[in-house]
Amino acid sequence: MQELIKVQHNNDRITVLARDLHEFLEIKTAFKDWFPRMCEYGFEEEKDYITLPAQKRATNNPKNPITTYTDYQLTLEMAKEIAMIQRNEKGKQARQYFIQLEKDWNSPQKVMARALLISQQELETLRIENENMKPKALFADVVSTSEDSILIGQLAKLIKQNGRDIGQNRLFTWMRENGYLCSKGDNYNMPTQKSMELGLMQIKERSVNNPDGSVRITRTTKVTGKGQIYFVNKFCE
Image (cartoon, rainbow, N blue to C red; front, top):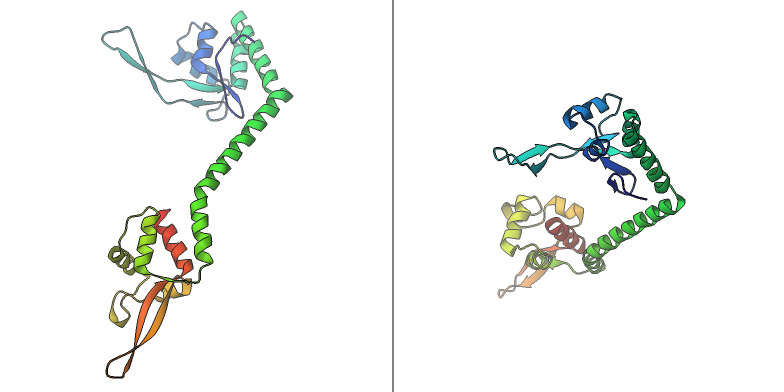
């Protein structure tokens, strides 16, 4: 079918630019006056047409070489009704052209082709999402099945390996400022109640024999497997 008026296709409809329609119909009235008059027939913005961003184009006027203009994207239904309103040969041609476009668009073959295209696009989107998630999923699987907890310095290295540059000291500071480690007193740098309840950290106690025969208990903050996943995601998402 010969293209009388340029149309645009997307997944759910055909649209026509108002200025292209105005030019084809050979309307004598200036576009800026004609289009508002057409809208008075009950067409609604966002439903029957959308206003496109302002465009610039060159002119032959040396004093004003660039001019700005506005165009509108019309639904096929609106374009067809406007063509009917004109009551002339050009309007009749445009209306018949739009009717034929509509029949072709709604043919079983075209409907099936659009459905297939949409399915392919959705599958491609899922494939990309799955590819992006693989490293995180692998990391989560490995860590969640591990019973080993790690030191905060080791967590800083793990975060760095996943794309966020942070050192041990900065990580300690961040955890104190955000309520994951105690910031003062005898429990300085020990897990807060919040960290313990969330299962993000644990305290490892170890008995050390002093030279004088006495025994002292050392306490070390360690990050659980769940905590490793939590903090890596928090820093790297």
